[in-house]
Image 1 (tube, rainbow, N blue to C red):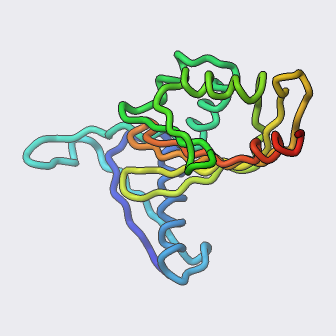
Image 2: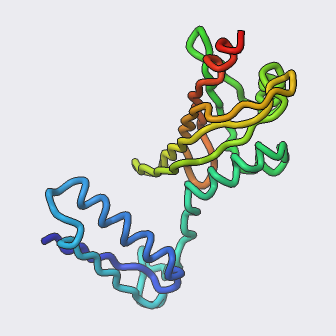
Length: 191
């Protein structure tokens, strides 16, 4: 029956404290053979004046945004081709890797993705089945699965094409996006 005590500076919103307790619970369950209902997380809050490091009082730091929500918002902006807003999600060294015959195509600019996509279809959207998050140090990995639907270049509709997107996020900015999908298979099947 693990019991984890966490001390926080007073001031974090309730949803952030709940998210922290859930993630601590998940980390314990993934590390120890303990059922979820046997893991206790206690968050103690102290007034900012009661929390000092190096003779300096501290205030609560910023909470990280929910990574899965960031990814979903980014994907919707890309569907709508709101590239300027979508760019605000990207880190300086952002890279996208898309499927290809020789190990994939790397792109660093959203405009390059739009140009690449224009050779394949008129438009595409995603039906998201799941969004999962994993954490390692300061990097959150988000895996999105679902199916694509849209229109081929000739106006013929398509749907139910599987996809997986993998994002690496650090400090609220995307470092990397890897994409796997069955578009090439569907294109080949069309002849």
